[in-house]
Image (tube, rainbow, N blue to C red):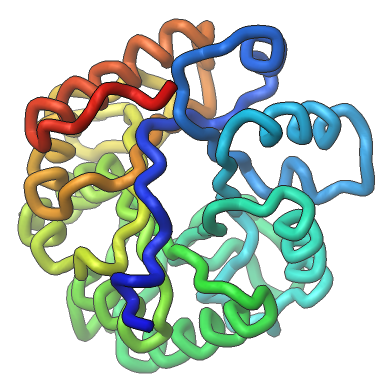
Length: 284
């Protein structure tokens, strides 16, 4: 079976499942096609978060998105973490599982940040090996997301987009293309965001992230606490023309507005996709 034949389905337009919205989601029928969860928030033995998640997943497809896989770390893979991730996946049965190209700590210490990677052949081989081992353990492909960055390494031997493309091919994994992160990094490092998009292998791209950021004039910080700005919407248009219909969601992790505000913003993504791709009406 080819990669294209095995590619997950187009889910439509989703949101991140956030605690302030539980009641509106569970008691209502919001026009959202799917939800993405932060995996670590549900890697627990029981309690209300899992009970709420069970109710949501009865009605909507779920995608699992992690922040602690630390795929680029030089520490050994955390097998306890992977066991918890696998157990959650068996319970939730997500459409796919994703995490970031980054490291989050070393010497057993989690710094709770998505730290950048030098784009070298040595690092690429290291990350490919770890992705392959994670996929073997989970029994499925995972999706790796491009992270925002604020510094670059003098030792880098290739561009970020070349690194991501080679990672997807060599490790046989999917890609989660974060449109906002590309925009942020392109601004911070003065590269062409369209060049980045054009380098991504379309058959590997299973998801888009859209988000807002904090523009400090000399640099941009990926804060996920603002509406999606116009320049990111423009880049989303270019991504749709490059990749076609890709499952799309809006991330909001701070200064979280009412659910309806995010639904209204998600409608902008629907409208843009309908205009660019002539998509059918939203899923019922």
